[in-house]
Length: 271
Length: 183
Image (cartoon, rainbow over all chains, first blue to last red; front, side, top):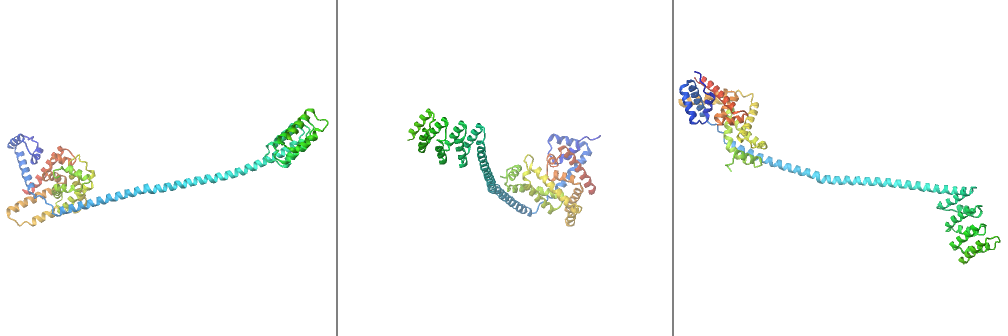
């Protein structure tokens, strides 16, 4: 009869507690199965001998060695921690103070560079443009003077009027211009041109030469319009020197009646 | 404090209370030494290895998660140390057990009964020594470390059923060797 008892279980039972039910079953089986009986006895015997091997006992050194090692280890851990914290602290320093300094320094450098660049550039541009503008404007002034001079000799009345109007745009009026204008006032054949010239000269009345020229020009005028206009200008400028030429003008025979009244009025106002 | 479980103590060590390792040492250094000595039969080397296992517990304390048994973890570390030791001593492995046996046999000038017992034990140790490392380890864990199949299964990373089969086979092998010499 082939035994179907779990042989591995037999080995297991060597080292583990058995409950009563299993023990009874086991004992019953062992009683009738010699193979299992033999095997189990052998196992038990061997197991028992194995147990007789004296328990290996470590030497006393082991304990002291262990505690020495533990202390040693604790120290290295503490050192490591110290090292770690010191390294961390150094890193913190590196990343806080130094960069702050460097950063502000570089920032200031950038700012300085920018402002310097802007300043220099600005200065250059301004100087250059200023120079250019003054040169240009003086050139324009010269051109205008030239234009005016040449235009005053133009046969067309309207061109001459334009020349007179240029004189108003000329900022620095020199004697040349004043003389040219006075010439026009005295000699131009067109009444309108003469009136306009008078107007232009009135605006330049701060100039002594202009005032003198105006006074001298009183007697030279033959158009009633210009005569009355020049009388008005004299009143406006309160030019006392003009009284004599005006009285002289009154004595002219061909003087318009209305102009006569006008001049008398002006003389009265001037006195 | 002594009533704390192994796991609780090891977790304290992990948290930085390294002195608690002392308590674990007191609890386990004997059985650990026993395991290593049975495996190698070398006194000094076993002491060094025991020390090494506790050192590794400190060093790798952060790897201890606490969801498994401390003892399982300890045997894992011990087996690693044992492996390293075996690799290092692969050349003088052959002479390792014989030397200790010879010493014992040579020193026996005792009474017959005692001599017989001594002889018996020598035979057994020889038989154990001739087992494969795997089988020897299984029997040591089961007989001398008094671990349950379940615990052995965890240490060797296998199932309880497999351990049951393997322990039986190892036992069978040991029996056949021992009784063959002894008869």
